[in-house]
Length: 361
Image 1: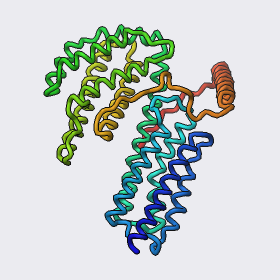
Image 2: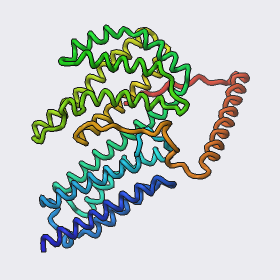
Image 3: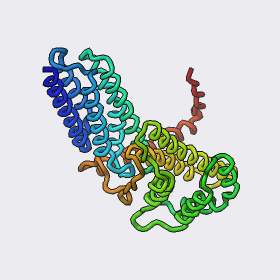
């Protein structure tokens, strides 16, 4: 009887997860209504009355639910963010971020409504929160990628970035890296610095693959640090896995230290391209975390392929282009009208000085 009840619950829980995954795929199309998932969760747990459900804190149920949740979360990420550099509409990005913000709350509230407590609830909420953070990071990375693509498509920015980079005292940077990072391979640092310099000097193709070139360069860094040659992620013991994760974390710290030294040098030299470099540094930090996180999750580094130029716009529906054009024209008209109003106010001598912003408590 107990085994039968557990099997019935697991089948129903798997069906719930499959339904959520399908809903997320459908939400790639307008109107991107993720709130349907909240209703599905509420309906499912309303049906799971104390008489109809097994002991949710049993080992077999907990293990099954964990596998199902992780599979679901991976499926959602792959369907919504198939490529973290993909072109996406602003509306879809906003709706995905809202979904990530609400998801763990929907899980928790539906479980509370069904009066489910204990380890089962704790683990469901914990996994949902971790997934939501991952999804928010990916949408943030995508936003930075779109901004970076605009910067890298400007020949003037590229020229200034190369000129400013060539003025960096990289020998001094390497000296500080050697002093601060014990065991850091100087030859490896030099190799990747030269590769970056070469990448800056080679113009992008007509396909606009500058961003993808940066991605390839960064993947080379992670491959050298966490790839098969380093014999990473081969341990099966908890202690060995922890050591591998710590080594992956060291790569993030070293990357952050080196990129900070370079940005510091650009700042002190009042580089014209400081703004573009700062944006690219933010992008690279997020992308490095993305690569390392995937390497740890997959048990080793695997190359990530990106569609050149970001591909077609995900989430765009017929009429979007016309609507965007109309919105831009309306904004321009509004800006023109606002400008005329301010000019009239100055002419009349009634222009008021701006109020000071209040500091938050």
